[in-house]
Image (cartoon, rainbow, N blue to C red; front, side):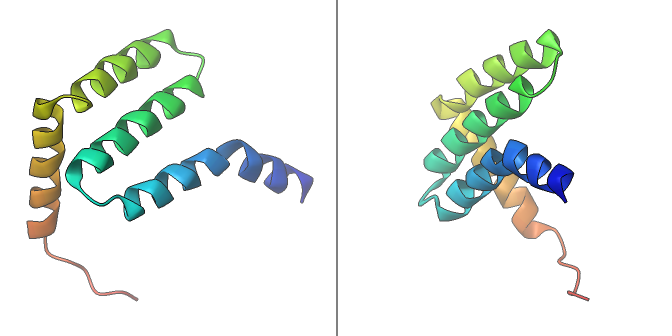
Length: 86
């Protein structure tokens, strides 16, 4: 039980990012949340490569082109067929 609580505490920020994403009013705000979440996730590993890539991607997501990229991804996801819930 203690191990599960420790894991939950360590990954609680991921839940916060998911909540912020769900509550985001627009694509620009969602882009910011995605960028922040990527940087946080990359910081959880020992690899410097993912830190560098996350930092670059976050920088892109903070631009108009990055917002357009997130908007395009969301549009694509909206067109995918939904599977019925079990």
